[in-house]
Length: 255
Image: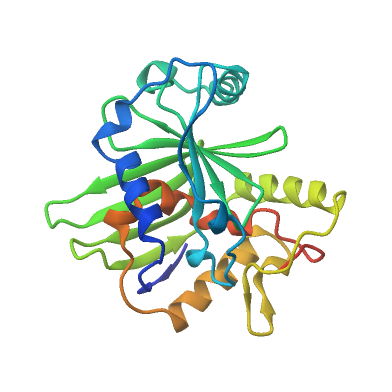
């Protein structure tokens, strides 16, 4: 396991922050019984405003899933992971669109905690993860994103001033396999636009795999970033989306 102490600059996009705060707080029990997805945030201009720093890439669209085939397929993918569906709010599922990736992210809230099941989806490929938030008596919140087998994907600590420290990540077989599968799919598609995860002459996305890309990215943050992460304003789902930019990393991918 590797650890880095990082201090991240405040992320722009106040409107997105306000929306996501409302989406990730006490209203996690919001339900949808309509068939159509309900758009609860949409910023078309943000969709094409891609920065070389993945932390400046924002979630430009958020939908509350309706009771439809998309929800049924998602539930089936989660159920395959031997999840106890009774503890989840299956009618409060939110879908997130990021402007730096074709991966779609879903957050399924637990009924009685701040934790969520986080699902990454590319075509018909699904990767099911668990997002856990634990706050100690000292006020420090420990965030951990793990795969369903309990293996760490990445995590961080957030203090009461929203300073981020002790960023950790670990080699994760399931994430690597999902990332490699996505990479193979992308080779069959037209070349995507340039513009993500390129720092100077280093293209982190063109490392051998997800792990190499993520280590490259975190190393950059450790050396170059300072300031605060507006965690309380951005919302917990944003933290679970940080690692998506490296999904699909490989020698011939886009930067």
